[in-house]
Image 1: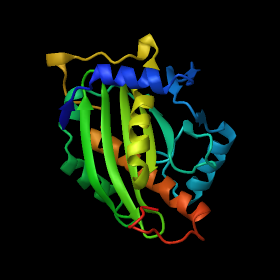
Image 2 (image 1 turned 90 degrees about the vertical axis):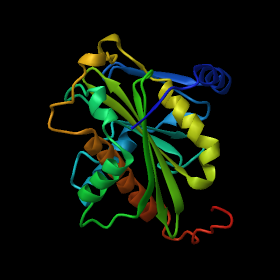
Image 3 (image 1 turned 180 degrees about the horizontal axis):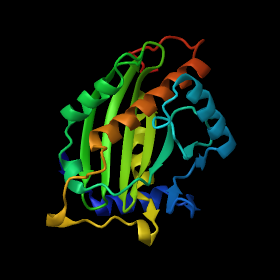
Length: 249
């Protein structure tokens, strides 16, 4: 896995300017605080639970759709791109060594293995990297649909002492330049309670022995995003004009 170090000054400068009218929300029950960019809001919990209930009838695997929170632009309809879902794992600490051992190839193989026999859209351009300063893994992939066109997902997984908090961002390819950086800053804004802050073990770090490897964690998040993608299409876009590659719409 590629190891990255963010340009801290650029991040802080952008975050200060862009979020002059931002909204900071704390979740004591989950142990984190997040700052939403201007124009973004939390998806109502009742709407999110209803959304998950509909998805669970079609895809009974709870690991894929166990979203606890969601955020999106206020000017959009509910569950219209771009949006961000949140998943939380408290089943145990992951070692950095197990994360570094994951590669684009091993993650792609795991996604194909777990989606075998399912009618999912094609997934391509999967990448993964690890920010050892913020303890965030970044995963990206792209999905194509004849009606919706290309949808890109950006997954930021922040390690904690008890597992991780995962943010799944989705945006149309035509809007990547506008929203991808905003979603990254939203994830970088996350602050953990002291008891959850990840402590690196350095040379004493050993591979996780929880029976779940990091490839499966990333594959679960990608497949969960695909399920949301499919639902978004069937719910909102049956009468939509076919995707036009010339305009990106």
